[in-house]
Length: 637
Image 1 (cartoon, helix red, strand yellow):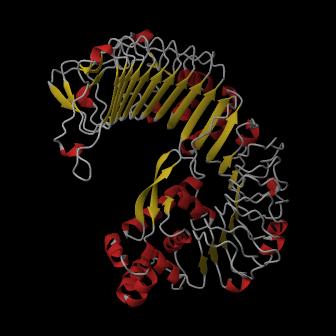
Image 2 (cartoon, one colour):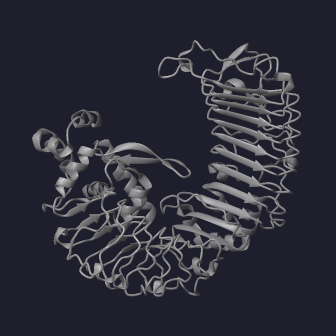
Image 3 (cartoon, helix red, strand yellow):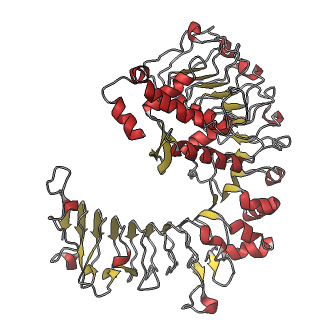
């Protein structure tokens, strides 16, 4: 259906299409009405699915919206079942988006985020026009209108307005004394008006039904006092108001469910926060916040999501009292506190998502997306682990079995500058199946680290009964000078970056390893490396090879006796300071028709023979204009 709408839209104005082509409107309206076919109510009210769909029209035209962003807004706006747990609401939100995509009212897309591509959705322009027509008189939407420098005059605010969106507009000021009379207004979205610095006290005085106020990413320095008299307010969103220092007393907004003050410049927790006993979501990761008052969470027993400043160590005993907590992002002082916290969760630990740092602050930024904590993530920084020589084993011994709950489902593990730790896992510890969910391992500057798995007691050649790291997609090891891996059982690995490790002689312990999903292979300054251990035909998706200062390596890939093989997706090849390197793979001609750049420097044994061959007669080497694509080749002796 989206393709048909694209054809209709070409050369015509969107409003005129719906006015002159009644069939188009009827088809779109029919799709919308069918969302209500299972709704039992005989009233004209919209159901949950319809309300969530209508919410998408509050975004600017052609906006690609991350799914997580929308799900969070569905929850904030009270559109989902509030009797459910937060994790269940997240699942419900994604299920709703899937249904809207399946009936072609939304379209899947990929949004380029700070940390990589993210799944998103997009509303077709004509669908959006239909949606705004349905909501005519109840919605006022000027989202994405950079010509809008001031809030519309009071006369333009209909008394029956329910939702107003000026997000991503050019608003710089709200006229002093302005007070739109909108008693039914439930949602006001002013987020991403980056030049908005001031909101007068009068502005909210006649919005006593307001439930959601989103001021994220504005330049306001203070929150108007009268907002605290809006007793109906359930979501107050102020994230990334980087100049916001002053927040008035909030204790009167007893209905507040969600408060986001992360990345503001508040220095103290606003007065009254501890009185908001209905709060389910609290985010206060503010870099200038000096302290957390004692017993802050004493009355906040309904909290489901808690996000606190990483530079402030939390009182674990207070967190343990939050029996409904499902998502937790914070730092604890030591492993004892971590284990105490995990133990207090009991069986809930399996359904709890957390990002926890143990040890010093260090300024490391967590990869958190859109107010949803998706995984179980553990970061250890500058902490002495001499009593936990084998990390997983230590947790089991000192938590009497809770280590299995703790490790089960762990997605990301980062250990940096910690003394004492030698291994992550002992082969006979019985935890291989529990840590198989690990997707990312990052190890930095671990002077005592010898390997990922300790196998001495059952023999160095022993093979584990199943792949231990079967879900691992990313492995980063840097400056771990005693470490000696070899790895096995990593079928989903996509990226390898190993650097500045003096003792590594081989990466993989078998000579017949295939890594069908591997895209990036980066090996830097590994002076003892002799063997990588990957079969050439086993890396069909490899896009980047970057190897430098590995003095002993002679070949990169293993030879299966094939005279020629293709790396169909390889785009960049960089080889530097490899004095013994003879070829990428002994006796095999490597054909790379997608290659874009080849850089070779200080590889004397490669000078007489190119490491890869490009077939310029192949279609993949041709540009869109049918001309041979240019390959940048830099070769320095």
